Amino acid sequence: MSDLSLLRSPLRFLQSRIPEIPLRELLATEEDWWKDEGVAISGDIDRGGTPWLRMFDRDGKRVDEILYPREYQTILLRGYRAGVIWRALGEKSLIPTYSLMHVISFHDPGVCCPYTVSLGTAVPLAKYGSGELQGRFLAQLLRKDDSVWQGATWMTEVKGGSDLGTAVETVARRAGDSWRLTGEKYFTSNAGAELAVVAARPEGAAAGVRGVALFLVPRSRENGELNYFVRRLKDKIATRSVPTGEVELKDSEGYLLGSADAGIYMILEVLNLSRVANSVVSVALAQRAMADALSYAERRSAFGKKIVEHPLLRRQFEERMKGLRAALALAWESVRLLNEVWMERPPYSERYQLFRLVAHLAKYWTAEFAVDTAKWAMEVHGGLGVLAEHGAERWLREAMILAIWEGTSHRQILDGIEVMERKRAHKLLFGLLEEHALSKEVEDLEAEVERHLRLPVEEREALAEPLFRRLAIFTAETLSRGMK
Ligand SMILES: Cc1cc2nc3c(=O)[nH]c(=O)nc-3n(C[C@H](O)[C@H](O)[C@H](O)COP(=O)(O)OP(=O)(O)OC[C@H]3O[C@@H](n4cnc5c(N)ncnc54)[C@H](O)[C@@H]3O)c2cc1C
Image 1: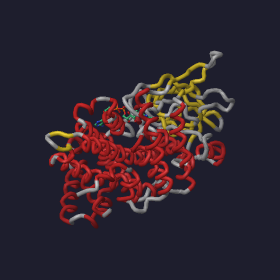
Image 2: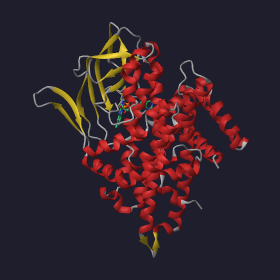
Image 3: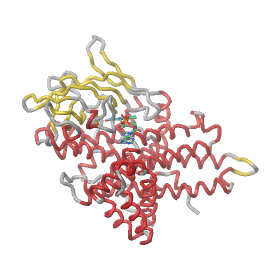
């Protein structure tokens, strides 16, 4: 029988599976603070709604300021101070970042969005920014106090986020040493951030993804005026504390990161940082939904005993606990691999290709697991589960966003199939898993993948999901077995 009480503490659950987790004292302090204070703030903000956009100041000057409830700053800045960004580059490891994210997102998944996009700004700046750009901007993103700057990662335009090669129409024109960007971004989380990394097409660049480059765009121009404009904020079902808006770039000052023709690689590197974060947050959210379901099931009685004591429900908790351990194993394998390869530049190593496959499997499966678990946790609450005051419905709203942004499940499946076809990444994956799986199982699945990759394109795509799901579950369960 599983120790279900582990569900109640993100740190204890992490430690039970990953004994080497660092910064225990810090993580314990953060967890205690969230329990005592953060949870109430987070709940109020979710009920209260999205931040406001104040477009003009008292004198009628355009300021595009995002106004937050004051308490939001308390929870947001706390994570920055604890080191969710500065530790990554200061300690040259992503483990502290993603450990903090697990603990924080157990209580509030939304607040990990600003952290993720700030990381997605700091890392490409540190890797690809010129010495001058780093000197101007990097230290602000790594500050350890409340004056820290935030980042943002804006790729999606109104024509869509999946097919960036077609949809990115923002144009960048050279202006001396820098560039001027003009266009509109349609889904801009952390609107109002001091710095953003933005996908744009240099004038005259090739069509398709190869013609898209990555630019650093500050909120203020060199002369102090606004450099980008927030047209409106979106009213979303979840991550309601995060200002997700639409941004207009009008001759905005921008600075090219790396070389223009390697833009798509950098964009994918940024996305990979977020996909791994998304996987960690999905697992923490599933854990939280289960913890709430457990508390309720221990209070509620039916047919003469607590509902948790009924065999069917007890069995469901057991099975889901197994699923949660497997989801954690898969998410953390993507963390570990990313931690090995995050400073690589193209052309990438074989290890990087293995990471890509594991990251697609993890983003896909952990988000699906989170949605399914949040739905189940609502059902455990019965009719009360649909009432906002019981809190369970929030996890389903939050989980739905995790399955969509950073590339939908469709995207993960198709890109996962592509990395197997073009880079033979499944060979590397099966090599990783063989120690903890029966060789017959590995051989059978490998043969199935090979058969699938030989199918004509139409069929290969149409039939991809059941195979990819099986591969994700097999990988997760095998890795989980290896953790014992
Ligand atoms: C709350 C929120 C915040 C966001 N913040 C940001 C942000 O800060 N920066 C940013 O750049 N983006 C952001 N996004 C956008 C997000 O990344 C996109 O929503 C996502 O990539 C999907 O793009 P789309 O919504 O345009 O859907 P589309 O690309 O229009 O796709 C529509 C549907 O078609 C499916 N589809 C597309 N192609 C295929 C195919 N070949 N085969 C099968 N199915 C396919 C998709 O999977 C999807 O289900 C945010 C989104 C949300 C919901």
